[in-house]
Length: 180
Ligand code: ATP
Ligand code: MG
Image (cartoon, rainbow, N blue to C red; front, side, top):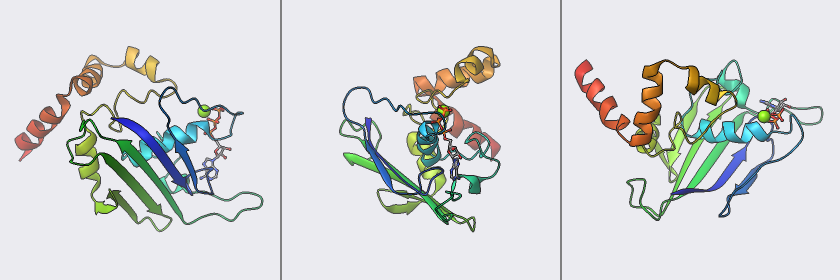
């Protein structure tokens, strides 16, 4: 499984629709301070279901919608689509390509789509849990994250290893079953 493409529209500094094709090898994003490099990784975490506005460097979810600039009006909707190559069936879905879309309106309405079909946040979280690509997975290491891993409590660190080992899914299901 690998990232193939990211489409972003109305998300943070990206007023116009942009798409990034991830070709084989390493993709590096370079640019001056404040040009939107971190906004790209925020878009990846957001589409995978990130719920914390703070961790997306805002104070409320609406802050991720393009807020306008000197010569552009604010937008009312933000949309991100992440397309993954799944030819190796790493994600247990019988599709060679999987696309996840998240959309949020200024009114607060939001939607998630899996291969263009509406779905719930839970479907996305469950699908990616233990794949190594979940919203809290170790595949996205943010600024300051390494320090956090080193200094976090042992239970938090254990969670990171459990996700890496692929057992988090079973543990979460067990906890949910026990709560019932
Ligand atoms: P650095 O090199 O300092 O890490 P960067 O390239 O990672 O910079 P980002 O943090 O991705 O930059 O982008 C910050 C820019 O995004 C700021 O100019 C900020 O005004 C803009 N921005 C963030 N949210 C919005 C929004 N909702 N609408 C418009 N612009 C936004
Ligand atoms: Mg940055």
